[in-house]
Structures are given as C-alpha cells and as structure tokens.
Image 1: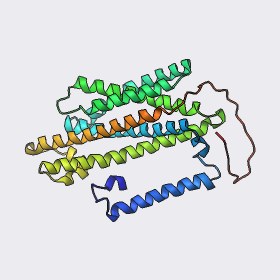
Image 2: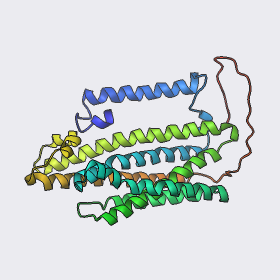
Image 3: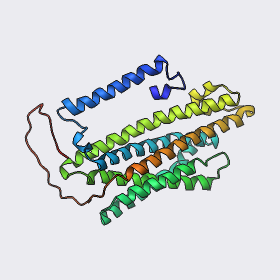
Length: 297
C-alpha cells in the first residue's frame, strides 16, 4: 500500500504513506523473528539460507515472480490503452506468452532430467529474459502484430526456462529430507516477488503517467484511475497525448523489467552445480506437541 501510494496519491513524507510503510515493515520483522525463534513448525527454515547457492536461487525466484506478474499485469494496459484492443482481444493477445511458456517449460524439465544439469537452463533463461525485456521497450503505437507476437513468444521462452529450472534447482541443492521445505521456501519467495512486482510496477506506472500527462498539459490525477481512463472514449483532441503518455509509462515498466532481469542473471551466477539425482530416504519420528522442529539442511 505504501509503495503504491508513495509519490503518486500522497507524498513520500506524508503520514498516509509513512504509517502503512512503518506498520508493514514492522509486521515483516515480527513475523520473521517469530518464524526463526518461536514457531514450533516454522515454514521459513533458516538452515536453508546457510548456503550461498540456495540464497541466490531464492532471490532469483523472487525476481522471476516479480517479472512475471509485472509483465502480465501491465501488458494489458499497453494493448488496451495504446493499441486500442478490447478486453477480450487483449486476453487473446497474451496467448503467445502462455503458448510458449508451458510447452517449452515441459521440454526444459525433460532435458534437465535426462542430462542431470540445470544451471544452463537458469543462465540461458535469464539471458533470454534480458533480451525480451529489452524488446518490450520497443513496443509502441506502430508495432505490427507479427512483431509483438514474436516479442511475447520470447518473453514466454525466458520465463519457461527460469521457472522450471529454478524449481528443480531449489530441490537439487538440499538433502532429500528437506525437499518439501525447499519447495515451500521457493513458493514463498516467488509469491513475494509477485506482490512486489504489482505494487512497485503500479507506483512506477502511475508516477510516470502522471508526469507525462502533466507535461502535456493534462491533469496528472488521471494517472490514479487508469481503468476509467481506458474504459471510456477519449476525445479526439487529447487522444494522441494520452496514448503517448501511456506508451512512455509502459516503457518505464519494461525498463524496470530489464534491470530486474540483469540483476537476476548476475545473482544466478552464484548458484553452484548439484546433482538432480537424489535417493529418497524419508525419516519419520514422533514429536511431542509444541516441540520446535530444528533441522539442518
């Protein structure tokens, strides 16, 4: 909430922004302390964070979740606000992403299973994500259908590689008795990235759109209600300035994605190689009610 409001609806130094920012930050710290020190069955296993490779993998998962949701959340604004597509046509326009992500992700999983190696998929996935984010910056009013379809296919390929390979990576880097905890941590990191992506992307989009509208002599307040702006016919005399403002705002999102992709690629270099072939030897033991679980990953 604070990230979304700050600099757009309210100044960063206002109480409307500071109160939720401080409250949210305090809540996160308290929750982390509770999980680490007091929870009988913590889902955040500190032992999983005692390896540089695991930390890098979870950071990559967070960044990938941020990129994916930020992309899927703000691409429809481009199609509706810049290209003038209807909501149904906008939904169909996103099919190249899912159409390439799902089958390619399956293929990558099979190849990793056969070869026993996953780092090539992580690294190449981030490299393709850097390329696709750079291509998203090129989207504009005159972009042809064939061009943006190919760009979205590349977006799907990058996410397919990173998504599947990181899922396998986080499991390969731990002992078999901790695979479940590793999956939970991976899911948590990726979900946190999704939430951050929507909020940070929203703040950046609104801030850029407000500045662009104001520079063109239009009310910056329109940036706070993009849905209404896109859902009503735009008068011809202000249509071009509004479309131009939305285009620049979408490009700012693409630039954010490019920076995140570069960061993800650099962090992924810290992941060490590990075998994906693991013998499953589950260990079960009785535990008293309320007893804290202490594991070593």
